[in-house]
Image (tube, rainbow, N blue to C red; front, side, top):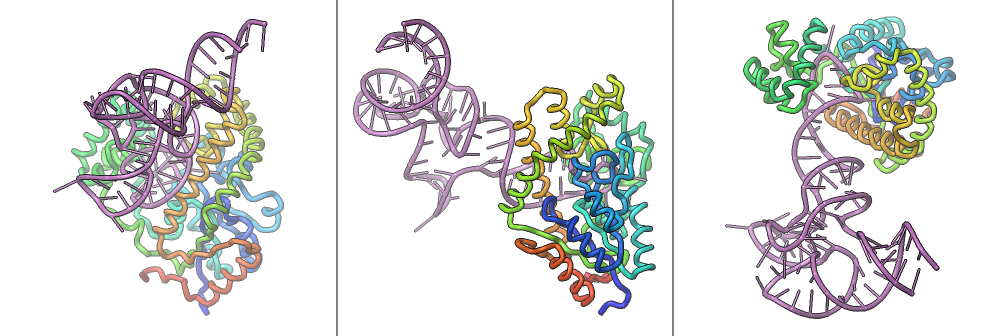
Length: 326
RNA sequence: GGGGGGGUGCCCGAGUGGCCAAAGGGAGCAGACUGUAAAUCUGUCGGCGCAGCCUACGGAGGUUCAAAUCCUCCCCCCCCCA
């Protein structure tokens, strides 16, 4: 028994059924779901980003879903800033906090005491991105090698996105980018039970492939509506700019090509399904690396049954990690 | 029936005598990841008892020291004429 309760983190690849298990579990805990999904955060794309259905949201309160305007751009640190108070509040009020979602970094940001580098003037980033286009990633790499060799070595010469981030921090703050190791430390802000839902790879892929056509159909409507709200310049710009915010959602670019008449439906389905499978694979990599997660295979199991199992686990406290325990 | 084009590794596709287990892309697999993370990047990618060997470029023969590449016959696909 764990009288203090705990944070329950429910993770897993897209398509395993985190949402339905989360709803069942929230019902049993008489708590709400704190979503941990970098794309469901955005408003206006419930189908594209696979948000919980209106029925699910009516049954259980879901926090941090559809709260960001699609023009905006969220971050792991911003997520931590909004998710942590919710977690703390639930823990104090109900003894439990339920965090459900597939974004590994956001999960760590919410649940672990991560030492996040500060935000910087967006203008600095803009300039670095521009420089990357003009001079290539190699130029950024060379500069980072000078300013923070360890960071450069870790990031490599081709990863423009992360080179930009590291450089903007080093250049504007004077602080090093490298040197932190707490991302993978088994450290938590509260007692935490991490559960990873999985499925045999083939079955997971079958589910993803089966649901994709519907996502394209529904997502196309959402993308159309979104584009209608843009001026033609904005719309053209969006096609060229580096992916950010909702545009970095799997399927957004592909669906945009489909909506613009530049590619067919079947081709779009194939691309999006493949991208989703790859994403699921990366999520599984996170889960493996996380190490602390109790893995539950949900094959042939009803969400309620899985929720019961997780509840029992939570009540036993057996796999619940103390904040500084290994 | 006549003329033309083509069949390459899981898929698409380059390769026209040796430097070819075969460019490139996709898929698949593994990994990295600290204010863009559903992003971005890396590695791997025929098999094996792996400094070598085996199997492989539609099939069967042949030419050659050497063939995915040349010749013969056969099978299949596409286009045009009939």
